Amino acid sequence: MWHLQTPPKVRVEVTLPMNVVPGQRLVMPVNGQRFTFIVPPGAVGGKDIVVSVPTPPPPTLPPPSSKRKCTSICPVSIKKAKNACIKELRAKLAQLDAERTELINTIDGMEKFL
Image (cartoon, rainbow, N blue to C red; front, side, top):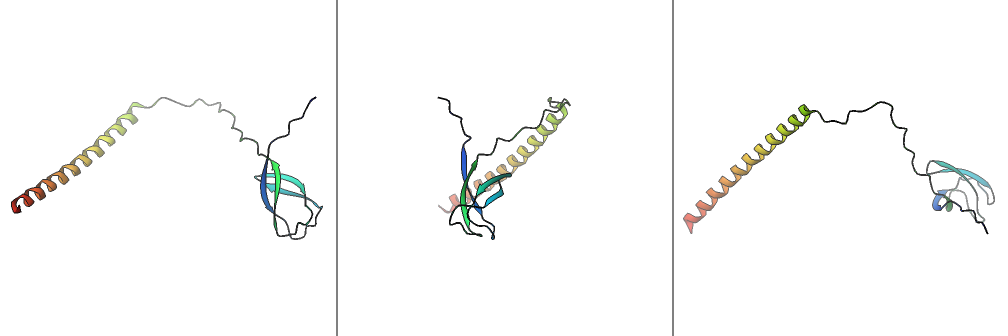
């Protein structure tokens, strides 16, 4: 026996318009898509109900560009980045050296009182 596979569904909460009546067919946007459903018995306008809608399709990727992009990294850019990194590390090292000297002086000062 053949079975048709139905797409998986998700349950979402929607707020009904004020003027709806049970049994009325509504078209509402859900997750960027429009879905049709029947207002269930006992539903009241302005209230939230939970409806089952098909899961949204996976996002589509844009077509590949016909222009070829350069994937190589320019040696000049690498050198600039390296130099900036070295400069930053040297500044940090100078800061740590100053902190080290300050700690040594503090320890020396404390040793005089012990």
